[in-house]
Length: 223
View 1 (cartoon, rainbow, N blue to C red):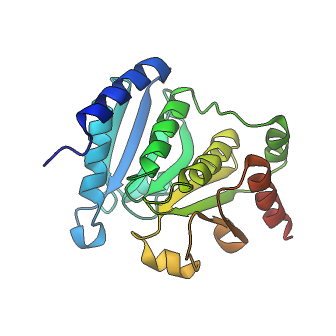
View 2: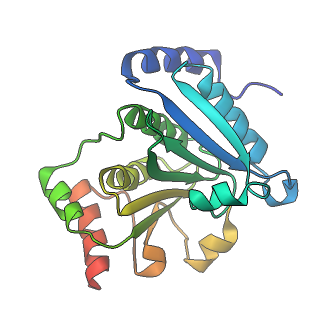
């Protein structure tokens, strides 16, 4: 199978990871042998394997969603292809990618790898951190994207930053075209489309940090 990463991209990643990766990163991939149920599983796994070849600090563990139900349940994996990350202490970063992280979303994957190598240390304002500390119940942020959307990575990374900061939050990227039924369920017509707690709230657009967090807090308050 032809390589997905160009030589130029490989060299860039080798240099970037050599400078930026602080600790080891374990990427868990969940796929399915049922090709009719997971058209992009093979490509997703391939791009992860090629990514791992650019740094000895990155390892990939591939799992079958159907054969390893207990493990999928442990990490709350609900569909495939799925990607999640663990830091050097095997701590789950509470972030997921559902669908292949191609196009603009490949940049999100790279930034998440770097953040995971730093044990999930992310840059957020003191005001945001204070608001996250007040969240006491589980909170799910689903960010619907497409590979050609230049604004989507900003929304994905914001949701993932909040998840890395708060033990109550999970952040998910969902490739809208790969999961049409879910996109239809939430009436996703433009991206990035952010769904809060599976429908308690929603908004569209790559908002700045303060506005993004305000939308989330308002949804929790039922505003």
